[in-house]
Image (cartoon, rainbow, N blue to C red):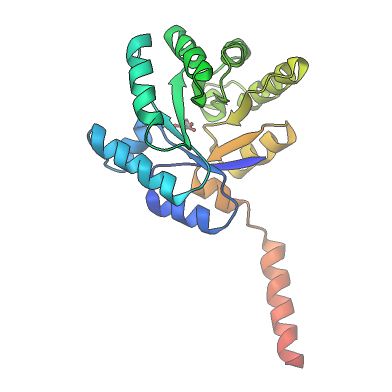
Length: 217
Ligand code: E4P
């Protein structure tokens, strides 16, 4: 199971990378805006910096919505670094664009996926990753984790190569449940990843061991 961090914040990326458990990064236009990146050149430079920090797949989202523009923008993003994965929205022109990118050796991440049918289309187009948004489904009283199970089952039935990248993760239990359901990748905020460390018995046990070690030092 791969661990991606879902942020454009360089300090958070560095902190997660330093743990030695980070396999990649996902971003989106909102995350880029959150860190104050403005303008096409600044965005490209930011992606380049992220690629230099993490040796893994880095999703860079296109903001075009027509096929021709998506191809142009996607090629520009893919040219930044070999690890760039072009993130494409789950719309008709997006699926056509994913087919083009797949046929031309450019990795893709089909984003804004909220149903098994959408995930099936992404796999048929040859997407490298599909991103079901579990937190946003939970937000509208629909069990986002069921979508992970459905997609994993469908992809397993037909041996699709597309990797299930569970996105819109809000807390550590989302990560654990995704692991149980067979997601290939999770992308999570730093807070959810760090929360996996926590257990009071670990803290208590370590405290006792260190105190006892004082006795024989
Ligand atoms: C990542 O690929 C997605 O864009 C991200 O996980 C969405 O998360 P959110 O629903 O918390 O905005």
